[in-house]
Length: 404
Image 1 (tube, one colour):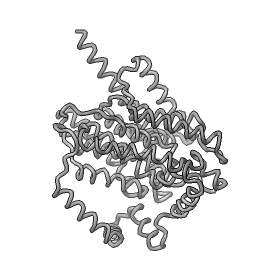
Image 2 (cartoon, rainbow, N blue to C red):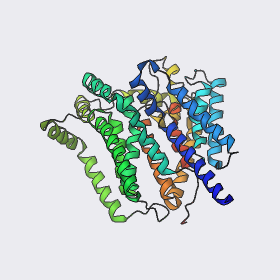
Image 3 (cartoon, rainbow, N blue to C red):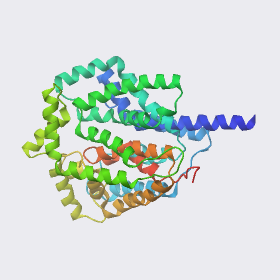
Image 4 (cartoon, rainbow, N blue to C red):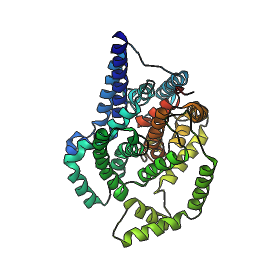
């Protein structure tokens, strides 16, 4: 009886952590849905994330830290990020645009929140349920699209996490569900597919690329529930390499071909059409390359320790709020020192993930990566993207699967 009660407590704790992680990762989704319902709620995102972080701390406190397994690499990462912020506030010539409480919640607590056992199914389903909140207001989205011809970059990225989770669940999990549960989940998937359709026809290019990446990654890096690690087949890798080379060589011709075909049958895909137009105008990156060039030149002026976290706006006299590239921002903000402290542990952890990761942990990392990294390379402030730091923190965990 006591053993059974202990199992129930552990399962409840894991599910609670999984739901809170999904809410934290999907904070942009929740904020966007609230703004669609009531535009007066502008600026609520930070408060929502702080509320989720506080709820996570309360759960951890009441469980006496049971389930929390902080990896040494994650602890070092937290200390380095805190020291970098301290360095910015004391020694930097430029003022950071991030307050300490926001930085602590969106970076440090994001690294900490993933240092627990997560139920992948619960995480995916919680993320997939979020768009259901927006069903009563979906007509507002259609009106917005008809007026603006697009969802807008922010709204597109907001719905990316549920879309990625839907793809992963559909391809990897639904086959294991019982018939009645499968029917209910299929209804949820259909609703998510409606939002995914809105992203595809009128969303940002980066979001569409992230969705494509998710499908391709599942195919290239297969992982099944009965084994540990990623089992790559040489013929599949070779096939995908040849396909990637073909796409790379004829990329613009392929885009123009599909754009022409789709327009001829009455479908105008905003992201695809805009990409073709920008290519013809010679400005595919819409000015981002100029911003990156400014940041790179500034990094070369202070290559060791950088200029300080989130100081690019002050550096450019508020001309540009951020750099639109997380790698270059890392170099600009913290120089080579911070860059190596963040990037080296991530690359070192790749060996573990390929050899020993469990089916569930692999899918969590894939979801967090697809929903954060591609977007961070083209937009967003590195230090205001909690889901990116969740990916970093989760990648630094070393939980061997039971088959290892």
